[in-house]
Length: 298
Image 1 (tube, rainbow, N blue to C red):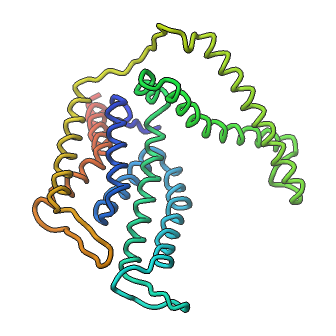
Image 2 (cartoon, rainbow, N blue to C red):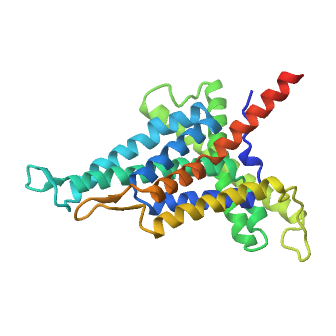
Image 3 (cartoon, one colour):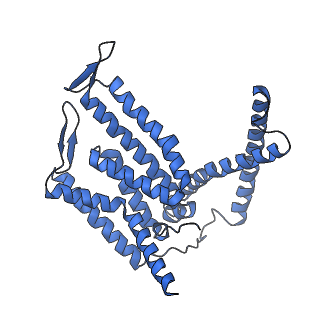
């Protein structure tokens, strides 16, 4: 049975604000505690949403990228006052560069996983609902472009299976035969994409796209639950922002490492960010507990 994500049932504006804030903090805060919180929370939520697919993405996509980023930074960046050892060419490997590379790798990994969650939650209809009246052409273009990538990938798999059933598999034969089979699959898929674009354009025209006075129907309503979640968002964000502005959550890597990680306001800021990052999972856990209680009464 597929898990029901409670967070995805919130109003699109609440979901968009959540992802914008968490991605903004993750990209511009290089504090190790903040990045670790963001990375772990994103991974847990992605696994809840996608299951084995998320684990595969994290192990074979995100983790290698994080390792490469962590290793490359000290090899090319030699700033810092704490020298660990010297390379054969005489360049030093500093502790500051190593730690900054680890932080940068955590930032890249967190952003990738959060964006995978974003693509799962923020569907094309939600995006058009939020920005359709403000930037109608651009919102439609972005929505179609984001939708095209997974649809094109799915079609390639379908065409590949069909070709394999008639003995034209991309996995059989020598390199030249596999290359020809792969080009044939790609050619069929591109032809399908072009034909689909014409059909989409005709469908949009027949439904009156671009005409003045055309209205759009939507089921989204901003209810009490959305207000409550938004209030928690704002409170947690304000507490965390106050911790940053007061200098209680601070890190510096160059020329020497300096980090503020102690004090009541710092701990409060970390807890607020932890709550913010895990709020989707908290909502899901609460919903699961409610459903189990109701099922037990039946």
